[in-house]
Length: 405
Ligand SMILES: [Fe+2]
View 1 (tube, rainbow, N blue to C red):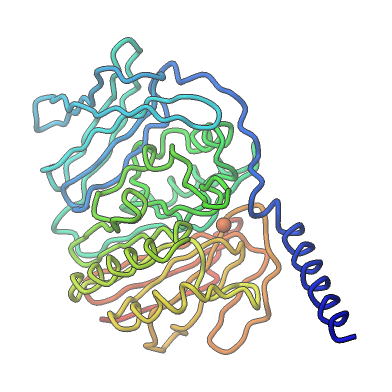
View 2 (view 1 turned 90 degrees about the vertical axis):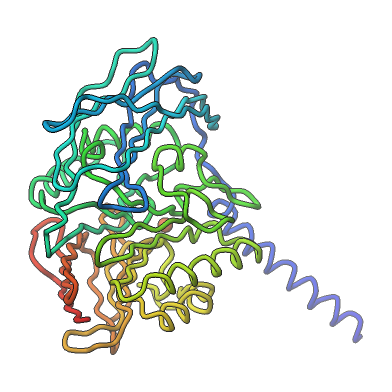
């Protein structure tokens, strides 16, 4: 009789497990197939990012053809002779085709100077001219724009949102996205992103984080191989997440980006923890802003990310992180940092995707805004940081935080 009871319990447990795995199968393992595509016949997906020193370094990447050819970036400004900067090429195999990606890095750029550039790959038409402006060293107040998951559907409105934000906030120094900038890691969505953004990403530096929609699902997930060749960041990240974790320094701020999707084994987690600890320790008394995809505190009850909470949150507390920018949950939420409080870090979850998740009821220490796509503007100087969250549709301020050093 006892034996029968034991067997019955085992059968029930196995059946429940099987049902659970089958209900989660697509979420864990199914990848939308990628149609075969032809390589770019002109330089495209031109993307401006920054080196470690935001005040003097910029990096430009592009895609052209399917084999590496001699390539360069031609840089011009009013004060300098035109110079050519040799680009490094890499062939990247995706599920749908082959792409040659290029990157050209610029350093010693002059503060306050406006530069024009175009990119050239031998055997192809050169790109159009684009431009960027370096920040002024004397400027006291600086600002940037933050948004969470974009994940627009093909033919959606993100082009309209990007154009509006670019026009409305010309003074911001960069845009930051907490991952899931595209809906799926396939060529159609990559193309759609760059069609929507028009040429904004060639002029406005973008700090991006990896999200789960930037990963190819399998037993051991891998970031879309195009990601780190499209968004080329300083080589100062965790050794276990080179190119997808990084930091950028400003006169009064260190901006740190963590790849939370890659935390799938103990070694990667330990490498990331060690790197983050030294990053925060070395940031001295600058504002410390950290961005990643999976929120420590979820918009939906019961979905708090315990891995992040038990590994990184204690580091944020110990080393005085001021602001944590997160995505993934398709709702808006702020934890801590109620107006007038000095409790930090301030944790933000935000999104601008057409997909909304049902948010939980607000509790003490929580500000929750449901069914409202948002964007955020952060302004700071050496003593004060001001965070404002706006409705994407109406531009009205829906949340506000001020912090003093
Ligand atoms: Fe996500």
